[in-house]
Image 1 (cartoon, helix red, strand yellow):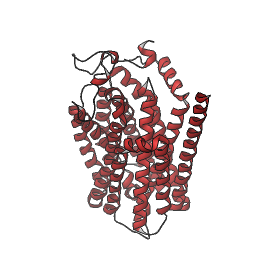
Image 2 (cartoon, one colour):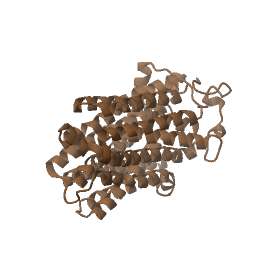
Image 3 (cartoon, helix red, strand yellow):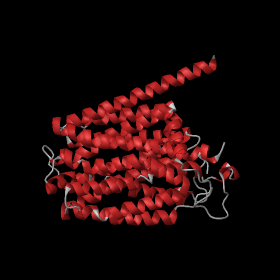
Image 4 (spheres, rainbow, N blue to C red):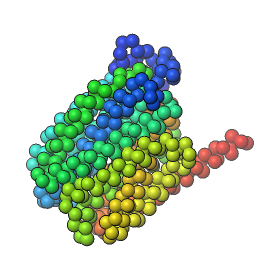
Length: 428
């Protein structure tokens, strides 16, 4: 088969002495924990994850302040989150295609550069329309990081270490989401939301520079065609794979829960019976540390329970957390957020790594489709969660989340049934 049809590609970003095609580089030359370049690679992608999630959700903890400053409702303010995640969802496939031609490292670097540039403009938005437009551009720019990062890992890391490596990248996402919300919460309490998002932009600049300096040049990448017909064919083939379709849907549904909960939680905690100040509400996002742990241990969990077992555990943990969060006790609400976060990051790490393992070619497109579905889920969760909160309070948001978890369990059950049918056919 030709490189265009297999997704294999010529070296673009690599050093001149590196092999020019995957076939010339034995599996043993790929990175492993403790091996050459692995630590630099892990730190670089960790920082990319920090910058991506910090910027992507930079307004989420500030929505009550944005509502007050711009005179808009919770559902209107939620578009500052939905626009960013929606922009990412729309552009993740085109960005992944560009990475096939110009290189993973190049596309990730340019994506971060544009995103941090826009971040420095966001504080000067004079209206909700301008703010939403800037956030949409920022999300579109950030699309070059998530799908391309997992493709880079699939090519440069040995298969047995892939779940762990992707788990570390996802852990960086959780730290970015946490730090962005905590920093903006406390800064906004003293100086307002505009200064808060500006400070986050400066932090993201530092992460982007460090990423580019640290990330090793790829040794197993080779450029592929970006002809529309080839791209459409690859996407169609991935969408025709039942396992990949299930994984895409699972990622979208998990993110629907997470997006809805964390878009609305600020409104709930600043209102009665809690009445917490903005800085304390921002600190609530320290529970993201739980996600860092659960994502980084996803590989061991899959080893013990299997992929579907880990997904059942993630979904069940998320559901229990949603139910606990209904209580009017701050302790129980916090415990609920811990469980929701742990369950979500477990499910996300397991599903995203399974996509990279399942796709035998066109990995960037396979990962891009997952990321697209994932962020469509985020946009849907942000919007539906805010609308449900406006209509029925926190119980409405929880109801949306529980329906999404039910979808995760149902799809995983379908996968279990399909696996049993396939095993029966093989045995026969």
